[in-house]
Length: 507
Image (cartoon, rainbow, N blue to C red; front, side, top):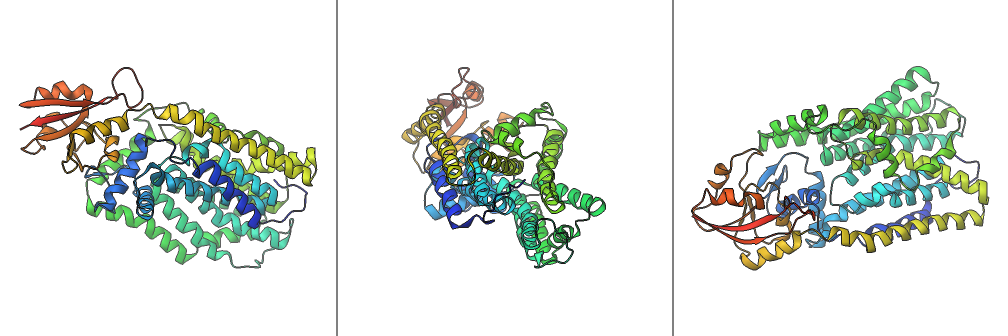
C-alpha cells in the first residue's frame, strides 16, 4: 500500500494544521445551518438536556421516561457540549459529532502517514472530511460519528505499534525482538473499546473483537511474522488496560439494571429481534452500494493499490482488510434493518486504501515535487468548495420544510412556560427540544391503550401534544377538548401522517 517516494512518516505540524483547517471550513463553519434537529438527533439531545436538569446519568430519559434502546454515551457527550457552551442550540448539540469527525480525520492522517508517507496521510485526513458518509454524520447529533471514532481508535491501538515496528526494523525485517514496549498501547485499545460500547452497545464490540481474533489466528498458524503477533498479544492482554476496558463494558449494564430492572426486556428486543429480522429484511448485498456511497468521491482511487508487498506490510494490510471485511459481513448478515450510516465504522480502511491509490497516481502523472502538491491541493479544494456549496445552497431549503419550529412557536404562544406539556400517543416527540416547558410522557409501552395514557393526566387543565390522527379518538374519551394548534407535516408529506396537534383537555 505504499509508494516508493521518500517522505516523512508522520503527519507533522503542517499536516495537522491542514486537516484542522479543512475541518473548520467543511464541518464546523456551517454546523448549525441545518436548522432543525432531526427525529434521531432529538433522541440523543433531549436526554442530554434532561440530564443537565437533574435526570438520570445511567439511563437516557426522554420526557421523564427511561429510554432504554441505547447506552447514554452520546447523550453524555452532548450534555458536556451544552454545559461547556452554555447553549441549547443545534450547533452545541452537533458539536461532539463534528469533533469526533475531526478526530477520525487526524487519526486517518496519522495512520496513513506512518503506513505510506506524509502526503498520503494528509490526503487520508482530507478524504475522511470530504467523503459523503462523514460529511452527513459529522453534522448530526447522533451516535454514529462517535462510534466510528472509538472503533478506529481501538484498531489504532494495535496498528500504531505495528507501524512503529515497521519503521524501527525496516521494511522487510521479521525480527522477533521488539525495540519498544507495546503494552501501553493496550490502554488506547481497551479504553476506546469501552467508550465505543457506551456509545452504541454490543454492536461496537462486534466491529472490533472478531477481526482482531481472526487476524491473530491467521498469523499464529499461517505466518512467520512473530513480531507483530507478539505486539497484538501484548496490547490485547495488557492486564491493567483490559481490567479498565472490561469494567467500562460491564459496569453500565449492571448499573442500568439496578436503576431500572425492566431494561432487560428492551435489550432482548434490540439484540434478538433486530438481528434476526423482526423489523425489516433488506438484501444482503445492499452494503456494497452503501460502502461505495459512504466513501464517494474517493473510493475509486483504491483500485491503484492492487499489488503484493513484504511480510510486515502484509500483516498490517491484513489487519485493515479484516477490519473492513469482518464488519461488512456482520452488517450484511446479522442486522435486519440496513442503513447507509451503519457502515461508518468500517470506512476508514477504504479511505486509507484510497489515499494510497491517490498518492500513487499523483506520483505517476505529476512526479513527486511541487506539481504533485499543486495537483493535490486542487483536488481537495474542489471537494471542500463543493461540500460548502451543498451545505449553503442545497441543504437548508431541503431541511427547513419541516414544521417542527413553527409548531414550537405556536405552543410557546399559547402555553405558559411553567405549564407541563403531556405527550399522549405521541411517543418520543421531537418538538419538546424547542420548548422551555417540562415534557411528560404518558405512554409506558409502545402498544399501551389510550385510556391508560389519559388516566395519567392530572385532574386539572392539561396541555397535550398528540398525533393529529388521534385527536377525535381522544375527544371521545374526555369531557372537554379544545384544539389549539396543528403543525405542518414534520417531513413535508402530503398525507398528514406527520402532523401533531396541541390540545387542551379539561378534567
